Length: 227
Image (cartoon, rainbow, N blue to C red; front, side, top):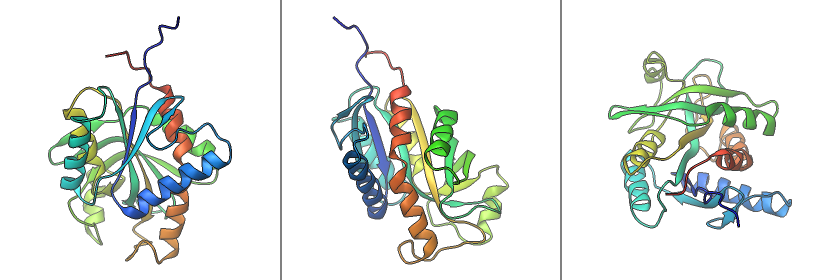
């Protein structure tokens, strides 16, 4: 009889309908190709996986994640925040990947787990795509123009509206591994107005659709004791 600990569940959180569509499309494509990928809220090699669309903004993300993790989700559920972001550093391009070493907002900083593994797997999965690692900061509004340089001066390399709130809510509900991976949809030299209509948005959508295998590799790497 095996005495291995139960696989840790994984919650993958995004905010927007287009992000959720990219993730679910990627999930279906991977399963059609025969890859060993968990299905929806089913069970894979790393444990049960659930996708959730939280809604836009930090308050919506916090409410949604808190409700799930204090309700039906088992203790120890790993949480990974994903979706699109704005790059802050000159030279970033739509379709670049950001793996957070930590997320931060005015309420606090949350260290991420497995940054090096995620960056390595993403680089292997998408050769030719640039993978950036560093702090990911949170905002309660869409960041434009000169505000980017102000945030860059804090040491952050990218900004989005939900990752920091998602991970902060996750760790406040219990001890668990957390991570954040975002796809750059606009950058200082490549600002977008609407995600779905410009080439940068289409590029970011295609990248987000392709990165689930790296998330599942990260998930399988987690060794959580039975609680």
